[in-house]
Length: 199
Figure 1 (cartoon, rainbow, N blue to C red):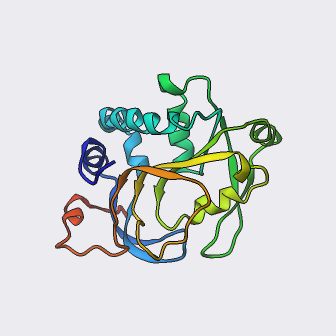
Figure 2: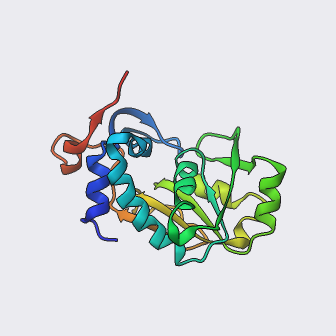
Figure 3: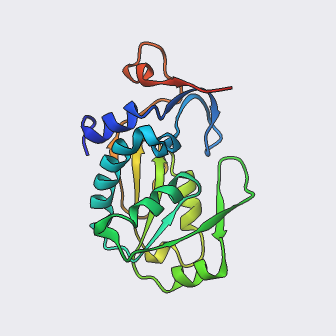
């Protein structure tokens, strides 16, 4: 999708761009993050509906039989996606985070049943809330049996689209592809959408 459009505006107007002091999965620090949880509030129900409609259209192109939502934000999105008419009948498998070194993420099946669901699948789509350096995505792709069954990664926003970003071995697509630097200044257009983090 393009830089401008209904999904970008829906995300930004929902107040998901938080300003404060944050550490990303990669270990880098910044003064902003996209907190997709803000979409799941009553006042943002229409915005969430718009976003889920478009995310379902992207996801269904890969004909998934199983969605894996990357904990936490991706899990919520995967649970919403399987409620969409285009993806009814698609299962959701869950993973859990394992302690890992800074700059990397490790995951495993949350339950034995999740492992069976993944092993029995043929078309997995991994759902993440925001792509940055693919730290979480690469961790999920290292879970046994996941990489060879994964058709794509999908997300709401790809904020890390820059030449030095490490790649991933599967296709990926986001509703909005727009680089957001780790540190925004007050003159950046996006800064105006930012909401100060509650202490």
